[in-house]
Every structure is written in structure tokens, then in C-alpha cells.
Image (cartoon, rainbow, N blue to C red):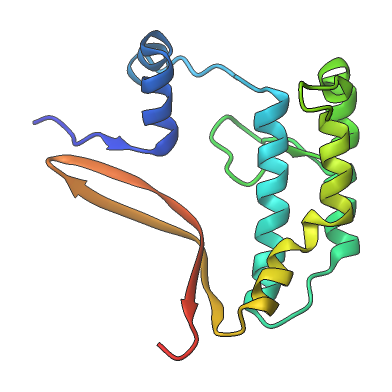
Amino acid sequence: EMSIVKYSYSRLSTWDGCGWRYKLQYLDKHFCSGDSLATELGTLLHYCEELIGLDLKEGKTPDYSKIKEIFLNANVPKKNPYDTEGGYFGINILADKYHKEFFDIDDKGQSYMSRCKTYLETGIYRLERFMKSHPELEIFDLERPFEFNFEGHIIKGSIDRILKYKDK
């Protein structure tokens, strides 16, 4: 009897991007690190936004000084390749690790550094501003896992943030 394969976003994205990498990673079980500045910065931003969402969900003002400190200086390596809690680093570490790419100016006149500065100055407050401008909404859940069967294939993942109307 064959086990049912569960497809996550990253699994489907790997298949879509490179069939050979998919074979190596998911069929042959050769996991390789594909870190890049974009993915590592994305992981850091996702973690910071989750912390902000958790505080807002509980009716608290986010501890922005703590979150900014994490954004700047976090150093939480993965304990193993399957660790879902670790693997995020602050921009001071990322700027050192990806120095040239971090400071290079793109075709829009921006760098990762300038985008990070904008996030610290204004972007970090985006969710709180949005929630205040939409008092009819509340955060229902964060990192909500889901799984469903689609024509014999299990699709799974997690939803970053779910909002709902307060009176519903």
C-alpha cells in the first residue's frame, strides 16, 4: 500500500521551479540548504510580523523595541534541518553574510538596506495601523495549519493570518 503524499507550498514551489531539485530533495531525500538573502530576510520579516500579530490578537500594543532588536540582531540558528522554530537572523548578521547584495542598489534605486530601514521606520507599524483603521475586524488566528484532500492529493500548509468581522 502506497502512502499518500502531502504537498506543501514549498514542495509545490520546488517542483515548479526545478524538477531535478524536487527529485533530489523529496524523492532521494538529499536536503540541501538553499539560503539566499531574500529567503533569510523573508523568514526574519515573517517572524517579526507574527510577533506583532500575536500581541494585537491579545489586545496588547506590540513591544516594538523588542521586535526591532530582533530585526536588527537576532541570531537563532536551526538546531537541525527539520527545526521550524530556528533559522532566523537579524539584518546585522545578514548584511555581513550577504554584504555586496545587501547594499547593492537595484533598478528602482533601492537596496535591501534601504528597504530594511523603511521597515524599521514605518513598515513595522503597518498591521497595527491597518487594524486601527478597520475597527470592525479582529485577528482570528495566526499560523493556522490546514490540510485537505484534492483529488487524492493532500495539500497542506499554514495560513499566516486570518481576520474576521468582530460581530460574526
